[in-house]
Image 1 (tube, rainbow, N blue to C red):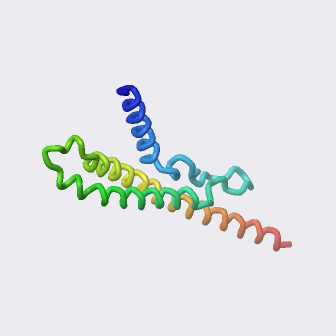
Image 2 (image 1 turned 90 degrees about the vertical axis):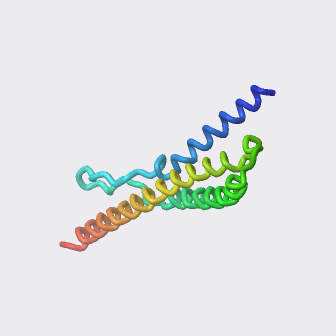
Image 3 (image 1 turned 180 degrees about the vertical axis):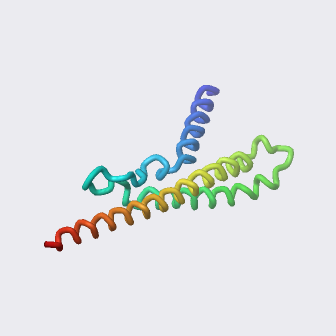
Length: 128
């Protein structure tokens, strides 16, 4: 029984650490200078920062709900999940918010770079 609880604790810890990184930090590719006449290779999709934002909102909500029991902790504080849940929620909130900001900034830069490249390409095609 003790090994099962320990395993569950490790799984929750790993899941929390992964959530703290956020999708954008893992999956968004920033704009890199193109090689020659190649189009910029970067992430245009805002799916990862939107997912980060959704996880951040969930962490904020869960943390707010857990904060009440955490603040009213009595002598049975060890049996109360409130403090631990509030701390984990705060960590996930900080990590995913930071990741979402990074993701929105980089996808915006990527979209600008792709748009500028397409404008250059269309201008080059129109010239005789």
